[in-house]
Amino acid sequence: MAKDYASMEDSNRSSNPSIHDISDPTRRTLLRGGLGATLSGLLAPLGGAAALTACASTGSAGSPLLGFKSVPISTTDTIVVPEGYTAQVIAPWGDPVGLSGENHAFKEDGSNSAAQQETQLGMHHDGIHYYALNGAQSGMLVMNHEYTDEGLLFSDGMKTWTPEKVRKAQAAHGVSIIEVEQRNGQWALVNPSPWARRITASTPMTVGGPAAGHALMQTAADPGGRRVLGTINNCGSGITPWGTYLTCEENFINYFSGGDTPSEHEKRWGLKKGGAGGYRWHEHDARFDATKNPNEPNRFGWVVEIDPSNPSSTPVKRTALGRAAHEGATVAVTQDGRAVVYMGEDARFEYIYKFVSRDRIQPGGARANATLLDHGTLYVAKFNADGSGQWLPLTHGQGPLTAANGFADQGEVLIKSRQASDQLGATKMDRPEWIDVDKNGWVYCTLTNNSNRAVGKNPGLDATNPRANNSMGNIIRWKDEGDFHGTTLKWNHFVLAGDPANTRAEARGNVKGDMFACPDGLWTDARGVLWIQTDMSTSAMGKGDLARLGNNMMLAADPATGEIRRFLTGPRGCEITGATGTPDGRTMFINIQHPGESPSERSDPAEPGKLSNWPSGKAGSRPRSATVVIRKRDGGLIGT
Figure 1 (cartoon, rainbow, N blue to C red):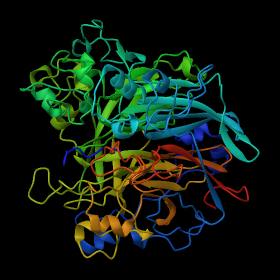
Figure 2 (figure 1 turned 90 degrees about the vertical axis):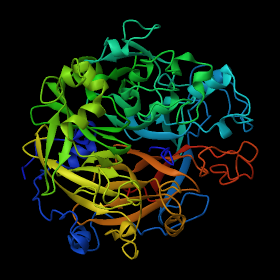
Figure 3 (figure 1 turned 60 degrees about the horizontal axis):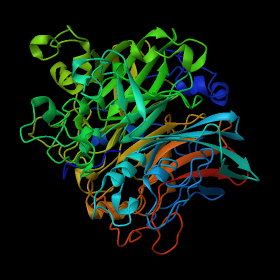
C-alpha cells in the first residue's frame, strides 16, 4: 500500500513452476496436472462498453473453486467472515515477539520505551508468510511493517519530539519474525522462541549486487557504500524457493528531508524539504537529512532479503532488482531453474519490473543461493495497445542507458531505475502493487488507482490504463511468451474494479460477482484461488463511492471463470493486506493494517480510539494492526 501523499499469453508450463509449487508440498500435489491454457478474450483497450464487459463474459456462474457464501458489505468495527468460518486475532502491534528474556507488555497509553518497542511486534503489519516448522502445526510467521502513526505510538503524539521518539518510531518499522503453534484448536505465539527476531530501521544490513560500493551509495559513515543501517516503509513482500523472505522498501523518500534546490535526481524521486511524510526523523538522526547526507536516500528503495531460519544472519539489500517504491517481489521459476522476480512500484505513473537471475537455483537453501539475486538482468514492462508487450532491459550501454544520458555504469542505472525506465519508454501505470502467478502461468498485477490519470494529459489514457480519474483500480494479467524469462508477452485486463451499476464511467466496473474497488494485496493459494485485498480510502475515492462499498475487504476469484466473491470484511478504517497459509490449506493468516485510520492518516492522541478500537473492542483503546487466523469450523480447506 502506498499512502497517498499527492493530496500528496500459449505454452505448456507443466515443468515451469511458480514459487508456490516449489515451497508448498500441498500445492505441488494439487497442481501436478500441468499448466496449459489458451489465451483468449484480450480486452480491447479503450473499446467503450464492449471492452467493459469482455472479462465478465467468460466462464459460468458457480465457480467450482469457491464454495462459500459471500459476506455482505459492512461498516462495523469488526471482522466478518463467511458462515462456518472463524477469525482469531493474534500478534497485534506491541506484543512481545518472543525474544529470550524480553517480555515487555503493550502499554495502552503509548508509554512503551524505544528499547521495549525493539522487542515487540512493529506497527502496521503488511506482507506475511508462514514458514512451516512442523507442517500445519507450527511455524514461523514473518511479516513486515509499513509505517507508523505517531498519534497512537506516543502518549502525546508529535506534540513533543525527541531522539527517544525517533528511536521508538524506527523500532516500530522493519520486520518481525515470530513462532506460532496450534494449541487446543487455537493458534498462539511461542514465547520465548529461538526464531524470534526484530529487524528495524537501525539493523545493520549489507548491500549486494551492482550498486554495492557505488559512489552514489557512499556516505561519511559508510565510505565503502556496502553497509546500511535499517529498512523502512516495508510494504508487500515475497518468498524464495530457497527459503528466504523478501521485504520491499516502498515510500522511503518520505522519511528524508531535502534542501531548497533539489537536484533532478532528487526531484524525480520526490525528495522535499522537511520530508513529504512528516516523520521528522531528520531532526534527531542526521542520516535522514539529505542536505548533510545526500547519498543516504540512494541506500533505500531496495528489495531486502532475509533468512528467517538463521536469526544471526545479516539482511541484504539486493540492488540488482533495482531501486523503486517497491510493493511486492513475487518469484517464479523458469524451466531451466532460474529465478524470476516480478515487482510493482506503487506510485502514480510508475512501472512494472522483473528480474531474471543469471544462474540457476541450487539445492542447499539460503546458503547455497546467497548471491543468486546479485547477478542477472532487470527489465521494465512496455504494454502495447494490441495486447502484446515487451520487457525492456535496464542494461548499461544498451539504447539510451549511456554515460551521455546520465548513467555512468550499471550501478547508476539501478540506482536511477525510474530515470532509466523513462528513457526506455516503458508504460507508466496506475500504481502497480502486488503481483502473483496462477497455476496456468498467468501473472496478475493490481493497479490500485490513479485519480491523476486524465484525457489530454501526458501521460494520458492508454491500453492498460483506460480510465480517467481512475479511483477504482483494476487488475491486469499477462503471460511471458516461451517462459517466465521471455522478453515478449501477451496481456489483458482480468477485471476493472468498481460498481457495474455506477453511472459514472470512471467508477463503473465489470466485476462478475461482488463489487469492490482499489485492489491491492494479491495471493494465489494452493488450490488456485486468487485472493484480492482492497485498500479503499477517502484520499483515493469519493465519499459516496466509499460509503457504498463500506469497509475494506478480501475477495476470492476463480481465474478460470472470472467469478469474484467477497470473503471477508475488516474493521473501520483498516486495510486488508498480506495473506499466507499452512501447507494443508486449512489455516489462512492475513493482516489487518491501520484500523481506525483517519483521513489525515495520523490519529489524535487525545482520542486514539475515536474511529476504531479494534481488536480489543474496549472504548477508548488504541486500535492495533494485527494478524488474523482464519479457519473453517469443520476443519476443511479454506474457500471450499
